[in-house]
Image (cartoon, rainbow, N blue to C red; front, side):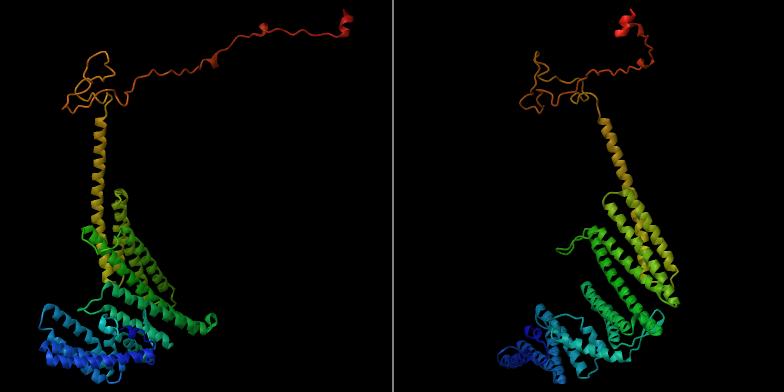
Length: 507
């Protein structure tokens, strides 16, 4: 495997080294099978023969020389392992079945290369399989799928989108769109082997790459046509194609984000039921779902903008706009529901009650909006109804919890008020308080109980009791402003006037 992954091309030195090692391993496997036929029992001899057939099939597959012989070797190994899977211990039967599953992709690939009836569509399923038997085939399968898409691209001339058939003249754009179609078929999976959550996310990542490449090719064509100065018909054609690719990208993005929402919901429900999660798994919170719904609302808003911005709108564009409006209402209802749940977890029952009520109203509006859509998504309609039912239920529960919490608070206040007493704390309900040692120094009053008594010693009162202190009165002299005092002018000493030299002669 290390030599296989280190290979850069079919003519490199490492490739010849790989083929040499494979040929040597195949010859040694033949010798081992011959030795087991002479010395070992029948079951061991069959296992060695199947291993030798597998090694020769891998060598011929890597050489790409004799597909019929490679198919014959792989089929022989598969037949032996199928027979061995019916005998032996449980562990041995499981190993044989695993070997049969590993051989199946190689057999299908050899049938395709030898013209044995396998089609390119059948091989597209193999590109999403994992396992030890797929390491050698992955690069070859990708090359075969690219060749098949290139052949299909020659016959593909139009892209259907919202009741339109948009011409696709660039071959690179056609190949990218065909790759998206193949990947979307892979997302459906099969009933016998449904795809895991991680595998679906991986396929969506490939879809996004292909759509981004197609969008880049369309915009390159628009730029090479002259951009704003391009002929009107060419510009409209490329702009419509760009809108279609952008719409497909947004639709796939919404589907991928809904997978995140479903996973977060499942995790949150497991936590609410008290079921154990996976080791090292981060706990889910309602706030996480609120953020996911914010992202979904933005995606749906962008898709609605594309539906309203196209020229010469058709009935399909109007239907898409209505579907986006209904979906926005449903997403807002779900977002409001989980905001209310976060308030409920924080024991803010009044706010949670109002938000649950608002979520139920928005879910009801979403259900009514879906009735106006001709072909609504049944899953979205069911989600809106589920949010409506859950919001009404949670609203009642939160109301009950809020009333119970208010009653408990009122009861606690009443009990606290009843316990208030203006008398000394030690008086309680039995009569007068026993004096402490410092208060009865002139009397013999035992302040310490008997040896086995649980009564606390009464030496001094800690903290000291409050004593009444006379309050200093506050006098406001308001009569002063109304008193008219007698005149004291006659009591004032008059100053004598001093005369000068002329005054002396006057005398």
